[in-house]
Image 1: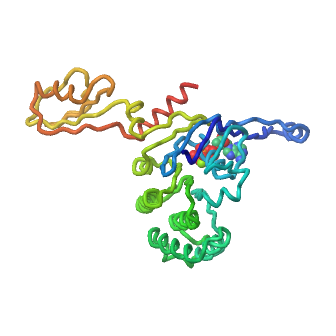
Image 2: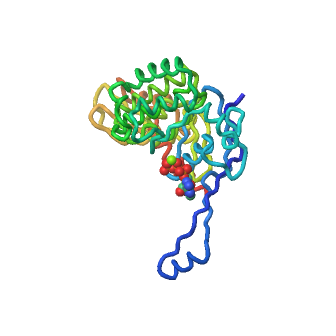
Image 3: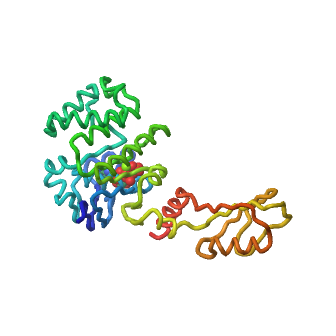
Length: 329
Ligand SMILES: Nc1ncnc2c1ncn2[C@@H]1O[C@H](COP(=O)(O)OP(=O)(O)OP(=O)(O)O)[C@@H](O)[C@H]1O
Ligand SMILES: [Mg+2]
């Protein structure tokens, strides 16, 4: 049984065309001219309970628009959208009781209230029983290290503190699903790592289903087995992170240390991109040559002391998909 079911989901925005100049201003008054933006363009996906899925794409791809529809904040233009067996925007109240959402770009807490009071308000809004609330608050305070700033007004928090407070707020009512829209944006490496560990813990220990959008591919590598990639409203990829590399990974690198320094270590089928003393770096197409064939070719001529094979960086793989996606349309 899927917990999220999306079929031909689409969202169009009407953006008014703004005319420039004096005549433009006059014409803006008389006629409204609209342009339609397909923010989400007929996408399909299903997500099972307990999955942790990375939702990737360049700026303006349609990620936040999708998340807002899933969270019941935006009404789709068309298509089927079911979360927890409900249509989010139609049964909003019941829906929000079962989901949590964090939008990294802005807080959902009360700006002028101390963190603890914001959280206490949520207890009333979600009707969380006192004991549950205290139990969860203690656990999240500990895991997210909230204690030093529980009494600080939200507006005075650093970005990293605010993000942790927001994440705590999204989970106090024990939702089954958590939507995280750029939860690590603008954070330093330590803060990012702490949030990643928390997300992993919540997914694994509490079985919370998580959809995560991010521009930080470390987030994805450390957290997600499955990724979906969207670009200009269209889903370009949905599958295992592993198979992303198989399909779009391109070139591999082999770094070889020889037992002695050879003047020429070129072999056929691979490109020698660096050669310095006893170390040489080769690049080869993963579709054309297996690593073991290459090792065979090298070792038949030179004595190898040690070697490592490097996959293309995930950054590079994703960049290739974005570029390829642009070429196809
Ligand atoms: N309320 C709106 N009115 C008009 N157009 C909108 C609105 N919200 C989003 N858009 C447009 O829809 C498209 C998708 O935007 P969206 O915010 O979903 O992108 P995103 O993938 O979240 O990008 P980013 O990585 O920059 O956050 C963009 O072209 C954007 O300008
Ligand atoms: Mg966004």
